[in-house]
Length: 362
Image (cartoon, rainbow, N blue to C red; front, side, top):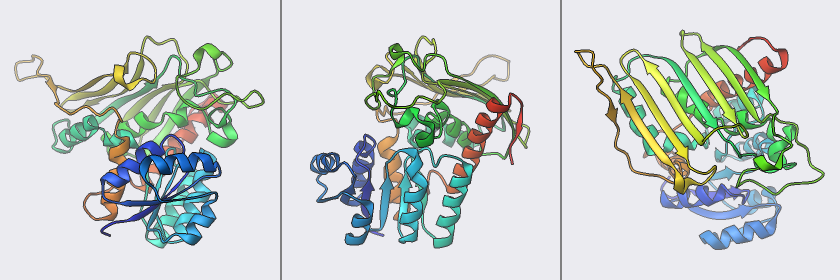
């Protein structure tokens, strides 16, 4: 597939990364569909996309496409992905994959049935730090990863009050499902082992407090709903004996926003981390990508992995990977089966919080 023809479903903020990523890889972004036609027109003008449509059905009917990108509230991921796959198209879908594991499994099965590529925007796998760390792990420098800690914690990061982010029926949950990137990245480093149990709790502190609103997201809705968590802490065990601690928050009393994965292997430990000076502002960020060893004499032999800086945090590079996968130039950075495992873990985190007890993951 020399020059895939791609249609964009949804002209929201992530289109600012999907479209240039596709174009950079050599794809032709030929149309954008959004019920908010003004948003579609603005996005099309910005990136030189020739046509816009008020509905997905009209775009699919009138355009000869090879693939689509789904950039919508989480509730609509599954139906739109299934619609596109049924039309014979490859799909790149924003995270999270779906509202729950059942939906993710249906999407994975549909992609397998029609033989089309289905990928999700787990963009943190596409960061230079993640590429460098995964390369070191694959070389055997780390050994077996026995445990990991995945954090995405914010102090003032609630993405608007009363919009779809804070409405569980539309989003599936709060920061556990919204900020799932570090959970996914830890699992990626661990080679996605089979999960066994989850023990977790969620918290709603500050969800009604406007002082904890983030500098990004969507406008408040006075008549909207805020029925999701503001923070979650949990522990996941795996059938191979490994463990994963997770901590996700939109609103906690942290000094700095932190996005990180720390792990302990049989040969070395490691850390991939971004610290923000101000929540949500990339230009203030400090990045770390390090391996930790003991030398033969018992001293420290730590190593900093030199990488280029990427203020987009892999968002453009992840979209490039989708196109290059379709072209046979790269392997996919993620596959649907991993998305199903990830959503099973997230489902179990919420279930454990509801039951106040450990939950077996099947």
